[in-house]
Length: 252
Image 1: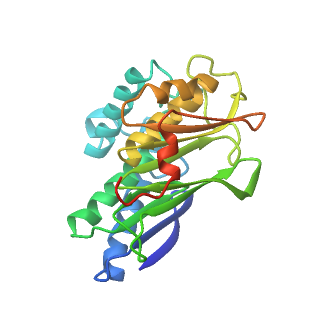
Image 2: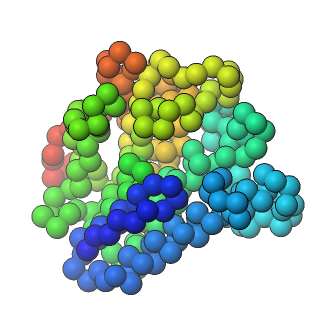
């Protein structure tokens, strides 16, 4: 069973390969994403994060989810030497560089809690995969050519892992280097990160993109992560263990 809906300013797809899946099961996942949007969308005037940014909600009134996301954001800031920061240039909070992966990961945990073993959840190109598809094969994921969206440059096979891509080729300069906030990021156009789950992949992909060309070295040094970077000239650099995801192997 597969459904795609527009939420959080992007398309979200949920596919469950287990035959016991029903529309109700998928509806629960989309209801969760609606809840996340109502709390964290910087584009909704009534969202919790907007009310916080406008001084309408005190910190003592924050929801538990909001407190957790701010804690995770501070943790990520420390782990990335300040290259991840949810304080935007105008001084307001924008946790979107972490929330998308966090929400996908949590949605996947909802499905696992319901007993499903074979599914994937995708939002805006970031994916959490579990088990296998209806053909009994590991889920395959394509990395697009940022200069030609119709072309897939890499096909990867995920085994209970997540992948996230950060870049400027779709949304323009929406990512910034916290150490040089007014300087456009032009060295690279995309970086895809595979991690133990999509939350981990997403937060480090955002930070790695802000680092420019040295971001791929940052991913190289992260245990349990692999990355694929494309620079402004169309040249790709991958981490040393990335190739294993190009090969379909039932024994890995």
